[in-house]
Length: 195
Image (cartoon, rainbow, N blue to C red):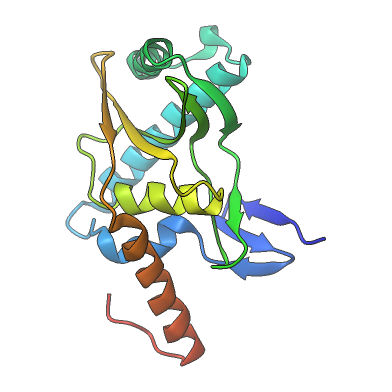
């Protein structure tokens, strides 16, 4: 039986030893950070990873709050408030998933119940939510074989508040599937697309 593995250092997925594309890499054409200085982009990425790790450890009950960077505290407080306000129960916490038919992988932040409804959740610490979040969440729901799951991004803020955004656009999954199909077609024909 083939297994899914994730190489965190290179952020790559393998299924049965074969490299498979990840959700975020498939969505690259929809996100343009070329105007952001590399040092700023790296700092934001590292901070986002730290927020995710703090929330993950907290949800798993293994967070050592004494070692928490004070800059992360309001984001963690916002996540805890969202979790309490919406009576969450998680089945998956930062666990990779694989779509066997479409042959891609990804790591949803959370999958489980939000107010009793099957939901895939993405945690964001960015200043704004980008349009590609909708297709991203649709891809996770499809990979989990729960295409009708509710899709929510939770934007955590530096003031300890959160803003949830529900994604319902029926074109989110076709957009993702189209990008994946185009990527696969280009690879089969040794074409390097201009995006």
